[in-house]
Image (cartoon, rainbow, N blue to C red; front, side, top):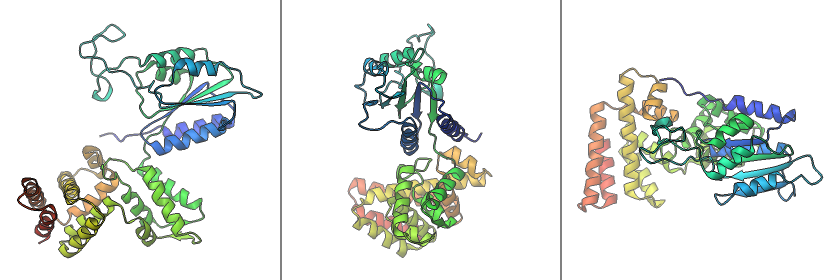
Length: 374
């Protein structure tokens, strides 16, 4: 499978260069899956454009109640004692194409087929989006419009208009190497070095989160880094122990630790960690579900590893975060496929006992942990 590439670094560099050299576009779109980058880049762009809250030459529109007429009326208003006017439009919904009914004809007159990535085919978007697309063909020379959107479909007329007449920055999730450099740079900005094991731990803590997404939650990562910075204030180096001292209260981190102990057949240690999670008011069935998910991941990673698939291929095949793949690969060395299947059957039996009322949830999970570690 081809490795996913992103043009984000190159586009970000070009955006900064354009802004530094005062080459402004009439409109910008900041979008993409990474919310942290969207917010950071929107702030950078607005700062470079000279937008300030409370300034009469800066106007913010937010939400799906925003109308194209209101935005265009503001855009056509001359700036007051300034060279330009800046408009921010947040989460308008104008880039989210409307899904057509099955069999309905598209604008080209052809029957609708399957859209990009298997989605239903889309129309050219909302009426407000179409109006803004028409505006961008002859935009006001003294106005810059910034769209900040989480839901974007490239088939909409407004997206296509921005692609032709404006600037689009898609904030994809960073690659592993880029993320590591970003973490090191953030700490360096505070005058701190960080050892590689500490970076590894931080990334593992935020790798997919409870939802097990195949990417790092940069918002969560930034918050964890801030905790570490505050804890290590006045020191020059951040170590693994520092990260563990202030960032070890994550639910997934505890689950990872418990699975690691179970992989080593340390039933007493796993049970102690389970009791700790119960004191944190985490439901036993939720703990069991997360255990099952991780053991299922270990089994699938082991199967692909035995089939001589590379870590990159495993990550793409299973849609797992690379750090989860790395953890599961390490844990899998303690198991055979047969033992992992047996563990999943034990957990399934405990779940069935809870749902049938034959066993209390706390005792059922304890029983599963004991049986999986003997």
